[in-house]
Amino acid sequence: MDSLITAAARALAAGDPLGALKRVALRDDAPALALRGIAMAQLGDLVRAKTLLRRAARAFGPKEAVARARCVVAEAEIALVSRELGWPAKSLDAARIILQQHGDWANAAHARYLEARRLLLIGHVDEAEHALVGFDPTRLPPTLRVAHELVATGIAMRRLQAATARMALARATRAAQLAGIPALKAEVERASLALDAPVARLIAHGGERLLQLEAVESLLASKALIVDACRHVVREGNTVISLATRPVLFALARALGEAWPDDVSRDKLVACAFRAKLADESYRARLRVEIGRLRAELQPVAGISATKRGFALMPYRTGELIVLAPPVEGKHAALLALLADGESWSSSALALALDASQRSMQRALDALAAAGKVQWFGRGRARRWMTPPVPGFPTTLLLPAPLPND
Image (tube, rainbow, N blue to C red):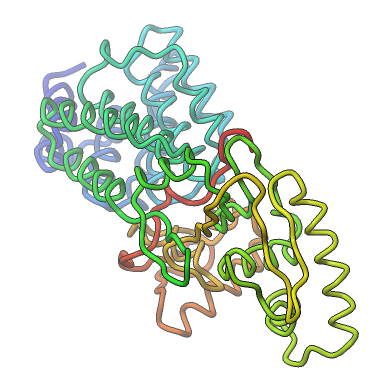
């Protein structure tokens, strides 16, 4: 490798893309194309970066498998940043294996962290955690230690482990300071802001207040009966009753929980569960059926008693009942929560992250765009959606995920 290529590579490693381009901007050989692609990615021109990296991968000879694998890893990182989450994981995994076989442990680790970050974005927390198994971050350079600890922070946040998340974030901060790269420091600062942001609302006794991660963790460890509207479960200690597939039952449970210790009128329950404006006799009969089903579901933790005007929820073993709700609710709250990270998302990536069809996602985005809540740029498959950060929305790391014992 010639001196200019070596100097450009060192400039990129230090976070100086302009310094790298000064050395290789006019060259079209394979190593120069790869470095130019990475430099353009650091400068934010992701389309040009992807084109250069693909040209570099084609230009490398059949004996340069490691160089081609590095191009695959760089392109995967661009896809992650541009929120193209549907890229083939098998290609990245194959590149990682090649890098490991040739002793390029740093880039192999980087490939693994990219896959872990992708899994975390689409809500596969267990798989993301499994991707970190067997890696000792203390043996990695500071830039990769930052990546490792940020993934560990995200996993801990999704698992509602506040102390673990803060320790991982502190390690990421120290590693970012050692690396001395402004972009890494900024990424750690964004993670710190996310960790300090409200992640839920506590609703009890007619009032409500915002909660940070530590407060939610303490609340879930308490003996209170919790109607969790973030995950659509009713929880008491280690007993978790999921109503995620029973929206009518959960709507009734939430209405009863928000009114506790008072009862809720039949007319209000009909409106909450069936969205009916008039509670006629047929709706009242249907309400009795659904209340019976809810009573059977909640039997391990609470009873439901009939009152003169409606029904009331009665916990068995605790004198406290609360409702835990997202910081902001609405028809498209989860979609806005994803877009609140300030990145540009494709509609396919949003559909993958929210486990929805792309068509329904497109309709939701069009509705939000008409309301002025999101904006788009590009056309066709290159269209991307984004919005400025919205105060009060949970970040992507704090979207509802399965709780322990679910």
